[in-house]
Length: 157
Image (cartoon, rainbow, N blue to C red):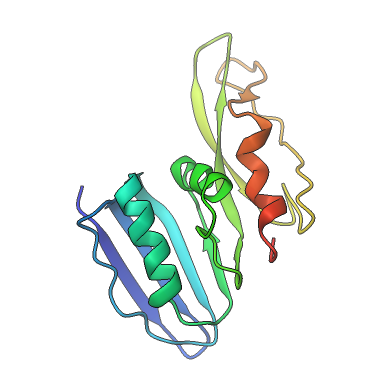
């Protein structure tokens, strides 16, 4: 899947949707300046080390210095946010991200969207929702505590 970035600027914000695979071939375009920027990462299917470097360069050089929110962040980005310094700019916050859940009884997997002020707060306190598989068995978050490390690191969290 190729990299794609779509911008929908308005007087209030520039909404950006990113799809595909972020690697050494991903080309981030000029970003239209607005009072704030909202970025959906829902369509990102992969991110390699070269893509991480490209992402951080774009954040440092191509992203305007206005408030930024990230939403619908997939697993691969959450891991990057928690493990790679500079992958979230100082003026940014994460508003929603996915947590993988698994059922030991049915082997079902599900990605659950965690939303700011519902499942986590600005202090990094997490409230895990109760998720059931198709048979009514309780599912467990399939991550370790380090997965959520970015919530405490992010100054704007």
